[in-house]
Length: 119
Image (cartoon, rainbow, N blue to C red; front, top):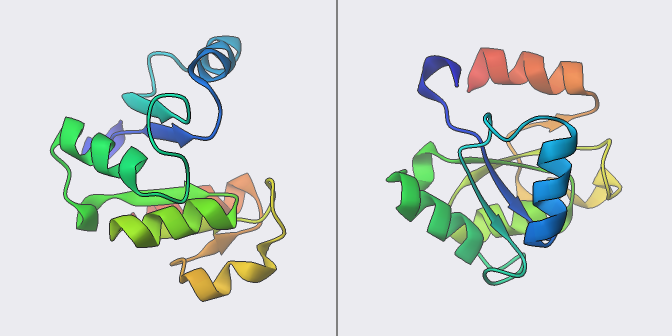
């Protein structure tokens, strides 16, 4: 991506579900790598992120997990990575604070603005 960024997906979805989703929104060429729950340890175990970091040679301090669940943010903590929460997804964001996200975005536009400024 722009400015040397790589987009990867770590999901509780299965491989077939992720591939179908990426195909349906035509993101197959945008996502550089992915791990699914049927390939590796499930969230909040850090293995998905550890495998992606190893695959792309990215240290924990260069990885930002963007997630919509407490499991996502806990996985980032467990992997030694920073996180950003999004409140418009699967979980109510009330429990996000204790998991120390750098930011909680309440819209796609707010997330985009934060990423342009900070990431």
